[in-house]
Image 1 (cartoon, rainbow, N blue to C red):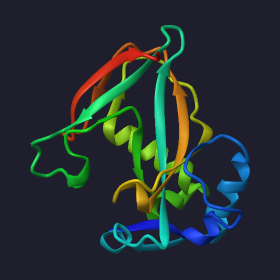
Image 2: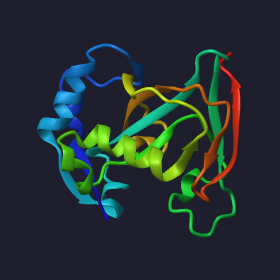
Image 3: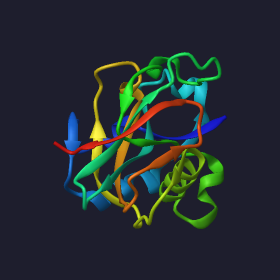
Length: 175
């Protein structure tokens, strides 16, 4: 499997930062679109000279002021990312693959693909919107990934997982 990567020195040409960045939204999208290549996923997962942009989507119900969160399966033998097994998350997403570029925006297309593979919405949803970027180099997983943070608003009070890697899902208060 090949995944989209960008040299880390290109992403951080204006200085390295940690945490959530909510400014210059188009700047980072343009950097990624103009400087990407594909590497074998196994190689990319241990190569900190490259970052793997991940469309990371938070799904909220603004009327109820709630967010969907889930626990990753802790005993699924087929689970591909052993470093994340059993951990809670409130973002859905995954790697950008070569097939995601068919409609001209591989980042956005990967978000649609991942959401459709993982979830079944029981309500209306709005178009995903980029709200920031996430960079943490605190562990082996985050050291090689660069989050493109999206938000999807929905009227859903339930979302059914389509993926066995999701063990438990809850709608929780944003607070």
